[in-house]
Length: 306
Image (cartoon, rainbow, N blue to C red; front, side):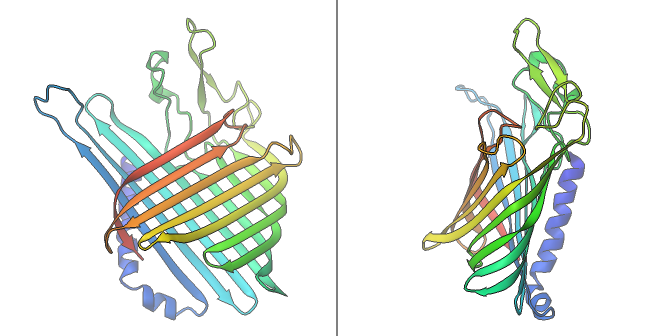
């Protein structure tokens, strides 16, 4: 955990230095532009002799949203890095992870000599930084001996050729009808079996199918259709909404059962330094969970633009 926090501190330091010299870096590389934001959300509560009760706690969430784009002649190359990590600390539970995400997107396009359309090749990579645990069933053993996820546990890698419709940097759709998708699990992860409340135990990924990966295996290959859309606009002055939608259908197994990944980021700007930020993400992937997964982060943000 300390290594993760130190890594993020290093990224912030490098980014702040880069932010002070963004114009020079952009002008010196013809066709290249870059922009992004680091956001730190914090929350803290403290109690002393407070009769209604309450636990002392502190929480922090660090997010990075960075774009590196290239346009020259008929070629374009859009790259986006999204990373976030959050922790909460309280007297009873110590430090626990509340948010963990690493995603890299890249699209290479060449104009088709038609308005807004390009031939394209895309790549997407997703994982998380550190181990996560299921704390809902404390009676099921020592939770921290049984990670339910972590770095490359799992990781998703998708790529394929397709067609890109891009009106501008704030509105685009990529359609890739021949997408290869890999799901990796580099070491054991666990789930809690509680079918019988008198016999609760952890099951290893070596013993059951997890994220679609067969027992004892480390990889799942899928081939299908990927559609990715991006739309960012201003709701009103100083309030912007970013929408990222990804759809995937596996031709090889249940093609009608489509995976969905939608993220909404709303930024309500207070001034050049502070803003109120809301991130909402929902995922449907029945290889991971039979239902919608939901993540929501809200708070006052300290922003560094670069």
